[in-house]
Image 1: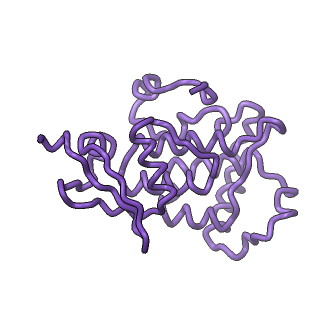
Image 2 (image 1 turned 45 degrees about the horizontal axis):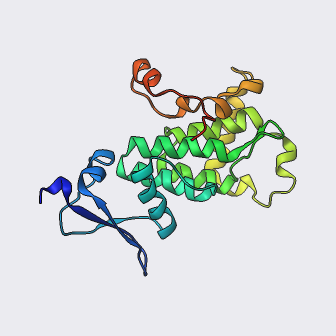
Length: 207
């Protein structure tokens, strides 16, 4: 049997790991830099829940969850695997999950999570740019009233708000058609305008 027809075992890095088999060709196509040797498991730094999301995504091309924490972890996994397609799918799903259509608003990440994301994928990532835009366009003082998370306890969050403060002198909030709610292409890291246009489709397109 040729290598691209054989199965590769992917396994979560846990005490009681989940193991799943995927075709070598599929894993190599979406994660070309992942070392995948026939007969040897690929240990991924993630949980059972996220590994299962990754497995279904490989076969279906969709992220089947409404749990923003799992989607964030899926983005981290895509970043560690250098899988552009997985990161794009995760950030698109994140926008859908966080958007509050009823109030024309969006849910915001907690301050502690911002520091973690900074550590995991850096401030240059599409996910971090998305979080920055959501705060710039949607944050209000009232958002902190029922939150036990204190931004002063997170040094990187202080830098995050300093950057937003400086940005407020140069830009205005985008309003009803803000990019964080309506334009996920902004966070996909497209290499060119041609590539962006080739992959663009409506954010709330039905499956």
